Each structure stands twice: as C-alpha cells, then as structure tokens.
Image (cartoon, rainbow, N blue to C red; front, side, top):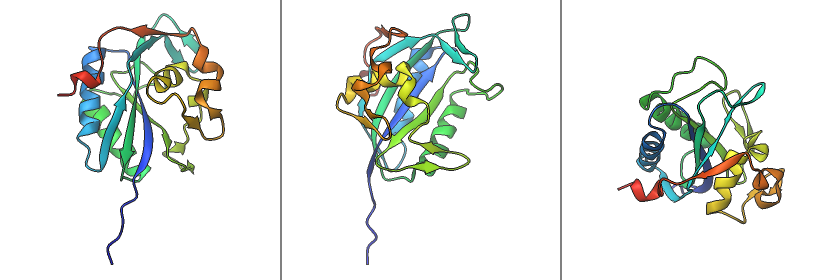
Length: 177
C-alpha cells in the first residue's frame, strides 16, 4: 500500500533589519523554493516597520523589511522549522539576544488547520494576530485568510495599522529566477 503525502498550506513570515535586507529576503525566498516538499505559491510585496523588542517598538534600531510567503508543504511543520533555521544560519543569522536585530528571521505563522504547542514550535504563531508586519503583507496575497483562533485577518486591528509602510523595491517573486 502506498502512503499518501498530505500537503497543507502554510504561511511563512520573513523579516530582516541588518545588511542588504532586500537581497537577504530575496535569497531566503529562493532557498525556501528549493526545499524538497515545498511549493511557493505567492510572495507578498515588502513592508517596512520599526523594530519590535520585548519592551515595545524601538525606533533607534534599524528598520525591518518584512514579507510573507504562502506555501504548499508536504513537510511536517517541525521539519519545515528545521529547514527554515538552516536558511537563517546560511544567511548570517546569529542568535545573541531574544528579539534582537538580525539579518533574517523566518517564522511559520500558520500551517493549515494544525495546532501545535511544543518546545520548539507554537502554531498558529501566538503573536501574529497583533503584528501589522505579518498581517499587512499577508493580506496582499490572501485577503480572505483566516488565522485560527482570531478569525479573518482583514478584520484584525493589525490590518489597519499605520505601524508599517510600503517599501517599493519590486516584487521578491519577480527576483526568484
């Protein structure tokens, strides 16, 4: 008997506030596309935002560029998390400070209907609903999306936030080939 692979939709948020932010995010999308078992179906435009630290917004840190990628995944979310961590490492991510400045941050936001609460992964992402730098680009590629436990993302206060602004650099999707 052949075992069927289950493919689920997933949302991955990308952020960078150090180095060549556009180049790093473009390369991250390329590398996500190269993961076996992953198909990238949409990439948002870029938005810019101030850094968020445990104590709140930090306008003295370099601003972030953020995007969201919609994927179809045959990987278990824990496997995907390992792959994303490897991409972060290859692109210079150093983990010195929680919520510190970084070359690249990749977060799984949602993974189909799955709810996970493990040591390494919580799904849906516990703070995504309140983060404009996730919700605003997500709306660009999936305006009818629902975040489990929070409803339609277009109805969330973060969807109407002035805490993010467009960053005109062309499409990351257009830079993939």
